[in-house]
Amino acid sequence: MMSAMNAKEHAVKEYGIGEEIPLSVMCWTDHRLSLVLSASWEVQKSAPSDRFGKVNDALCIARRGWNIDAFTLIAEGFCSTDPSATNGMDLREAFIKPGMPVSECIAITHTEPNEVTFIAKPFSLTYPKRVVWGEELYFPGQTRIRGQDSMYPRLMSKVLTEVEYESPPVDEIEYYAELGEGLAEQGFACQWL
Image 1 (cartoon, rainbow, N blue to C red):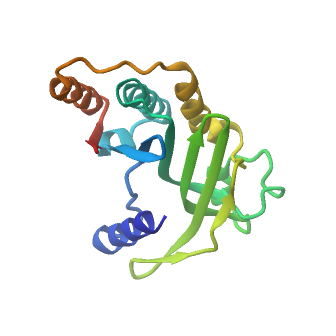
Image 2: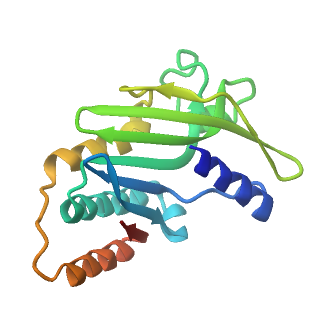
């Protein structure tokens, strides 16, 4: 969470209010970080359904090529500090309504087979180019995201359970280079460890 917060503060100081951190995915194998994906500006600003498709394809490549068994998605979004007051509401729409308990946030969603953990760090932006952080919301082993907001945790769970690992051929260097190119075609920079 700290590195995402630092990135947000730096982006706001450098580029101003309205600047977002890129959607990123940490990919894990046996509790060790194996791969880091970062969405390009084009993916970040694309229509939600297009972005979802690109993330789907990137997660499938990661799972198949690196035997990923857990994903951690880091992105900006919206969160409710009173879920019962916003039940059934689109949080993006509730955010613009005065007095609603909705804030912009950095959201971290960690998905393993049969488990989703959600952490959100609410923030507000003030003049001049300053981020004010709220209290962290933490839901271990569960998720409080609803409706279309749960599509990414469901996607990550589905990829983990339905996409099979493919053992690399003898020439691993070329194999992983080709996978990296496939990720780049989907609009993701990648670093494998």
